[in-house]
Image 1 (cartoon, rainbow, N blue to C red):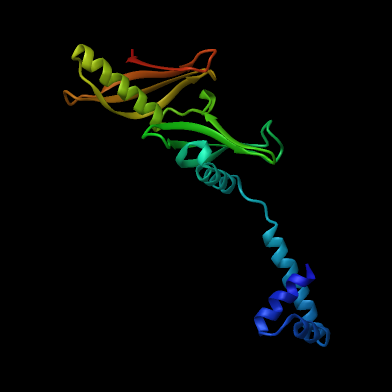
Image 2: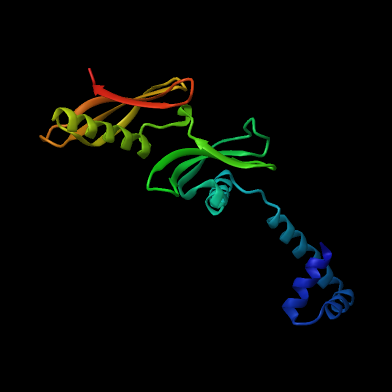
Length: 206
């Protein structure tokens, strides 16, 4: 640690390491200043990353690893600290862009001392305003409109959670329709079966 301090001192005064050492040895006040400076450097360098910083760092690593098949991760934020993964791990979530197409997927991801990985976001961490969930509901409405000729939902306002059991998220919102000016109150949901396959649906609110 002291050697690092001497290196910075030598660079500051444009002398070699031996010259810096001699200057410090002959000046005790300079020596104590160097010690304080060195301690401060290492204190700052050893400060642990915040959960948000950890998520951003892990997201960059996932995207840079071409074998993961991700071209981007947006809105990376921490879900929880000190998960069952290991004490220092941070569980994160974000919107991932899949490399082989334009598909977006909500994912959860983490980095431990031995691995870095991601998977589909668990429903218990899902939120009603998640743009991939909203997109799935709107796509479902478009398919329904194409089959039946009924008005298509083109936007959902004021999404709110009604319940979340961990395998089923139920939400409410106001849908803007392709026809007419009045919004329609709806309930919409996402649920998973025992194989973790996802299903979506919606209906007019009571």
